Amino acid sequence: MGLGHKDKVAVITGAASGLGEAFAKRLAEDGARIVAVDLKPADSAIAHAHQLGREALFVRCDITVPEQVAAMAEEVRGRFGGCDILVNNAGIYPMKTFEDMTFADWRRVMAVNLDSMFLMSKAFVPRMRERSWGRIVNLASNTFGMVVADLVHYVASKGGVIGFTRALATELGPQGITVNAIGPSLTRTPGTLAFTRTPGGLNQEQLFAMVAGLQAIKRIEVPADLVGAVSFLTSDDAGLITGQTLYVDGGLVRGA
Image (cartoon, rainbow, N blue to C red):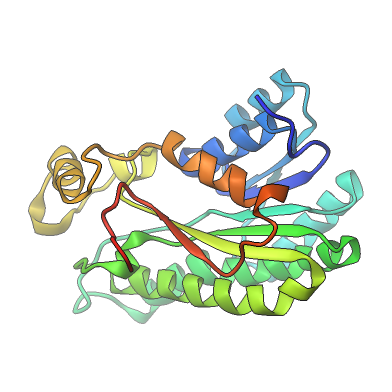
């Protein structure tokens, strides 16, 4: 267990379960002080950090609402002085055909998956600029590099994440701030296990098996497969890596 992130403040959205919980726990293990942001209590992530002797704070926040993000950021500044590492993890993926999709459906996915990254970054980049050091990791998806039905709004939002990552990296690089994205494959999490609809009418296990079969490494992804990438990209070792999208997907998307 390393301490490469010792005394850094890491803010993770969607930290109550799934990938966000795993990222928060790993960054605590790396030595960071943790801010878990979610609409639901992030009890597991906070307890894990405390067991390691790390400071940890849960903040309930709807990251699509500017006023709530501003209040959350003020609470973080009051407790820790600011944020050094921002992991924009929270996202939703409701399956619906384009024919049935409403503009409200479209806007909700864009708000959670993309607008929130703008709001969170706006809230915390000023402190990073002051310190001439910062790490931002955004959750993209390998669906942007492949054909997936019934997810027009989701795939479009993740394409936006990749574009946002590249553009923000260009602006913030001179201030010592890196911005990267990771693109997971279908990952076994509470969210994906709760799918009520899947492409082709497959059940969850059939869907997992189909996706694993397309990968070079033929097993379904779990959150533990992604934490190393986030740990690395938020470390000093990744100081010259920015504007990149790293597909951590068992080789499903090759060469995209």
